[in-house]
Image 1 (cartoon, rainbow, N blue to C red):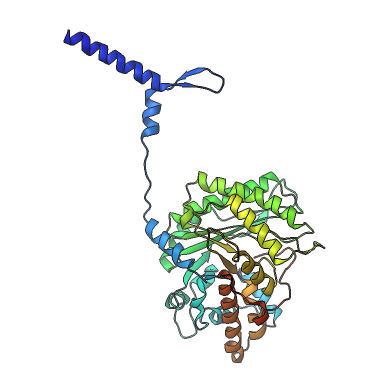
Image 2: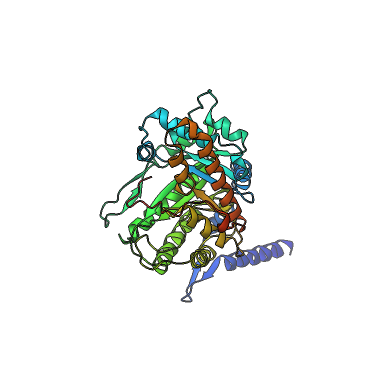
Length: 397
């Protein structure tokens, strides 16, 4: 009868459903999964963030061919020590004067896509009253902001550090966005002579991932910086081993926190020997090891790889970058340098307003040389870059 057929069809449907809900484990056991759990799994929600389009546009514009990042986000204490190193008193006005020199360098935007600022600098203006944010925007340079709160000793470790600043970050990021910042940076470090311990690597990776997720939701493109410190006698091969573990952990946590790779930038150390290692490697060897690491750990979707100089000399940082860009890779491989762009600049200026033009010409030249290195077209024989190391033992940013 019609009723019987309906019952038969219903029973058949139940059998099919139960069949679909029955799974076999690796050991051969039959496990029945509830309908509710299956229904819940298939109810996929696609997240569309408020700032997704703007984040993508910012990341793409900052990683145009021949462009990199000027890192000028040193803390007041660190900036002050550099000023005092050239005979200039560490006052807010002198810090403002020096940062005005950097920001107002003519044609800086030709090779600089973004400038990372310290919180004090984000709210400062030129002597004439124009905000630094407006000065950068006029040159097509995105203003960025350092959002971490610095390093602290990591309890129960071998003298290692952890990076603080997650508390209140969402609120601070929202305020930075209102002030004009469109990207941000968080620096965490790993020390090879100190271990590194598992807890140090995990804390570094997890902190970077939480920061990146929070800031993307606030409209800021995050720069993820897991720096492998130069301090030590470790070889290139030892650096490769540690970097491999750190980058793997970092991208695992980034993925776990749903960070959008095409809307973030990675700021890693290059894979090279420690500062005190007796064996020195050629630019080609450093480039080969670094690219091998990138290819094994970094998703191609990542918007850009903006290397830190980490104490390398002005010339070496440019040579290494140039060597990497003479080999094929799927990313925008570029620079986010502080000391490697500024070292000769601050020494030339030394607080003398009459030397502003000469100091700015040096910055412009350094930006151009690294822009050429981003294209793989840097010619060392034409360079005036300083060959002195900028490494500082136990460096604090």
